[in-house]
Each structure stands twice: as C-alpha cells, then as structure tokens.
Image (tube, rainbow, N blue to C red; front, side):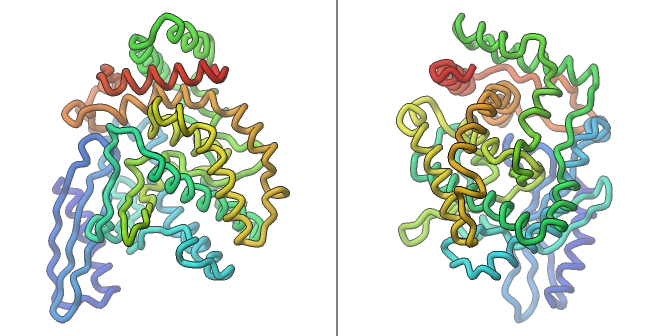
Length: 391
C-alpha cells in the first residue's frame, strides 16, 4: 500500500501542476470494492488549493504480485488500458466532435488526467464519478430492463465508434488494433490444471442433464483454443470492451433519465462485437430477466448499433448486416458457458472470500467454492443455453 501511495503521489504532483493548483493539499483514501476488482489498489483523491475548486479524482495503481504477473496476461491488461486512454479515447472523442454528435447521443468517457506506464507502477488517474452521484449496480442482483437497455445502448455506441474509426483512418486504426490484439493466456501446465479445477467446481451445482451438457462441451477441448476462438475477430476487427458487466459500469439517474458510463478498459481488444453482448447477458442477467427479455435485448442492441452508425453517416446494412449479426450470435453464443464457469464465480463471490492477486496468494484460491447466488445464476444460465440449443 505504501508503494502504491508513493507511486500515485508522484503522478498527482504532476497533475496538480498541469491543472495549475498552487500550494495544494493532497488527500488520498484507499478503498476496497469487496471482490469487484482484483488487479489494482484503488484511491479516491482530493486536490485542494486556495482559490480553486476541489479536484475530485479516482486512481488505480497496479497491485498484482510477481507470481501472477509472470503468467503474462496481466501485464497486457495494464498496457491496453494505457493505450486506450492515451490513443483511442482522444480519436473517438474527436470523431464525435467531427460528426457533431449530440451530447445525449455521445459515448461518454470519464475524464482522463494522466497515467504512469512504468512496469510495476502502472497507474491511471480519472475524474471521480462517484463524487458526482454515480454508483455501481449491486453485483449480486440480476439487472432490470431499464438498466440493461441503457447499458446495451452504451455498448452499441462503443462498437459504432470502432467501426467509424476504422473507416475514417484505416491505417491508424490498424496500428491500434494490432497493439490491442487479443493475447491468449500462456500454454502453461499449471494454468491448464487451474482451469480444469475451475470448470469442475461449478458443474457440481447442476442437475444431471446440465452436467452432461457442460462436460460434453469441454470434453477434449483446449481452453486456450476456446479463448482464442471467442476473442478473435471474425469478419470485422472491432475493438470490444472484453469485461462489460455492471461492476465496470457507473450509473446515476438525473431528471428522469438513466446515465451509464463504462470505467474500466483493461481488457479492450479486437474481437467480434457480439462477444460483449453475450458477456453482459451471461453475467448481468438472471433466468427471470431472460425469460422476458432475451430476444428483446438482442434486438435492442442491433437497433441501437444501427442508430449509432447512422449518426456517423454509415449504412448499417452495409457495415454490419442483420444477417451477419445473427450468424455471429449463433456461432459465438456458446462463449456464455465459458464465461459462466470462469468469470461468474468471481462476480458472485462474497467479499470476505474474494482472493487477491498477491505473491502470498495460492493460485488455487481462484477455484472458488460455489455459493447459493452462483448456483442459482449458473444453473439458470445453463438451462437457458440448453433450451435454446446453444449447448
């Protein structure tokens, strides 16, 4: 914690100078998300100076131990986030300006004040949206329609910006896409053994049919190959969020409207746009929501993507035809099962049981014992995937 504070303080001094805060006072408060964050130490910051309004900031400082960093994939997450804030965000905001996108229709980024890309000290400093009345959704509850519809509308705007960036400046986009290409987890025996345990543990909560279907899906399949399949672009090399779930979205209601702002870009990479949609459905919705809104939510995404593309003077039927969208869903929806066994246990873990990625943490700590919330959500997800002939 002391090292994280020292790293952050150095960067904050630079930011205070850039913002012309003289004789300033820094107040740092570390906080814990209780299982919603695993890779960083988080801080709320107040920069105070005479004659200036307090500057309310939020910071993330890398906290993963060397044992976990040696696996390789974690390092890429920090690099991707720095690349996104320093390169992609500026271009996308510029495109929204160029096409005169109305404020209500824009994709909104948290204001980025600065970062430190140095290995082991990776830091990003953003505006503190919590201080502005935003909050995270309860990760233990399935979302309602209002929240889901708004979150998917925002997701569609995110993907539309990737499409227009690729069209507006293909050479620049290709360079960024290459930097943000999905990096497969290493082909490591210890990781393979961990994955096998992480799959077997959730299966225990299923009925006989569910266990059979899930085992058949994973039987003889290399999980590294599965990750590559579902996180590699198909026809379009689109930037996807990669971890689009309520814990990475902040929301607030104002004047009868719901506003949602994504805040975490560590997992941005090139892929198929429906993957973000499938990921959200797998982690944010429950069986009751899907019984009423499954098809409605899929249609809502495509409608919102079409609308967002139209604002950029692009024809959705040429850019991403509905037939292609439907084919992508058919091909990629089994990814929901991989998300269910690998990510849903982490999303639903109780705060006191959430493992940390420090050097004194055993890697098997990420084989989480299913709790009642997970059992209910996962069993419902598997039933829905079976009912719809996805698995």
